[in-house]
Length: 171
Image (cartoon, rainbow, N blue to C red; front, side, top):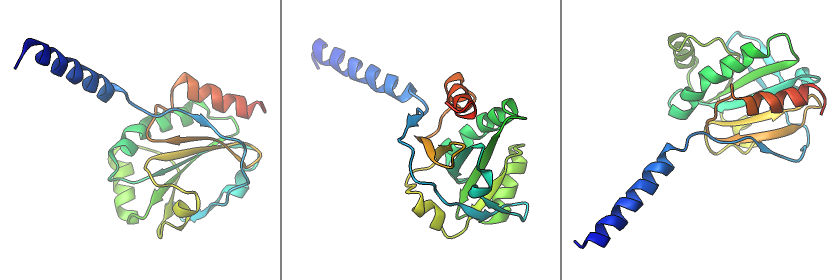
């Protein structure tokens, strides 16, 4: 192999390695959509209805225990919830079609204290158009989707916090 071919191969490898280092998705603003419905049973036995959260900003996150990126972003979701404690903000994690025992075991093993609802038949997942996990939506106080994130992200980032605080402030 010629020296120039080695250099090209090394350059391609360097670019691919750099691309592999890119992590996380970004908040994508969306035009306020129609109000979405979400009413599912929670792990605590209560029925969680998104309509009851009107006036609050809600982070709705679709996830599964087998999804590595889902598991990686969970601690940042918990930190975000803790940072916004006392403000009109709620997290609602929608587990997609897994046995309740598996979900409980994962939350316990990961030391996570987050509200989880179970989409046992994937109906809500389909209705929301979720095809990739994790997929998250930030719902404004008016009940309409304001942001969507496909893939994992650091929910404890200043960008996420600023976007949510703007919605809380009514901007």
